[in-house]
Length: 221
Image (cartoon, rainbow, N blue to C red; front, side, top):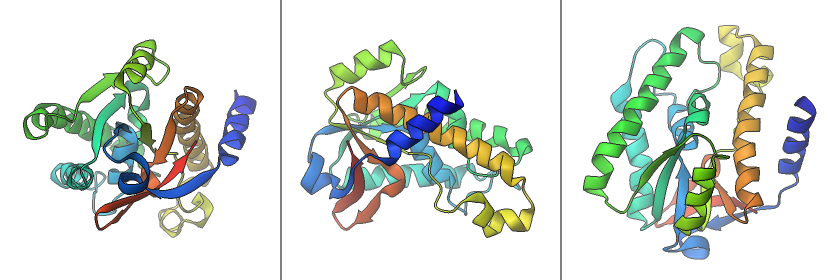
């Protein structure tokens, strides 16, 4: 499995990437899919959200809604997809074991919140849940949806664990964190492989930048 995972990461490292305007240059009004746990990981990485010493659920909900509103304000057409196999991928780096369930609870609440409120406020934004990216039901859904590309996270972190000053201050086990991040990268990039293998493009949610009316991002194919 380790050999296969290493080959997957090597494959990903060779993918060509380019920065594009998802709205003007790339997708326009075409439907795309936002992978939910990549979205949550981006939002939960916000240093203002603390599920360790507190449970700042409202701030987390606001961060997710603000991201989605950014897409909607730019006239993006998208659906949200959550995979149960991905649920632990939304947990940020070096989260203490005792706090991990807080993120999983927040995930469940936010998914339910979106399921209840988005159909009322934005009926075109559909929300789906599947067991995994390899689920045949999802594969059939993807083909039927006509989606132009998938927006997801690639599991990368901007700084290696041994160079992260926050981890050094809190004396985390760097080897344990590296192992966890390796697993996260493999799972997200397995999704990327599965999607590209079916002929779809990828946009990285962790590379997305808001630029006036534009959504600048890295596209891979």
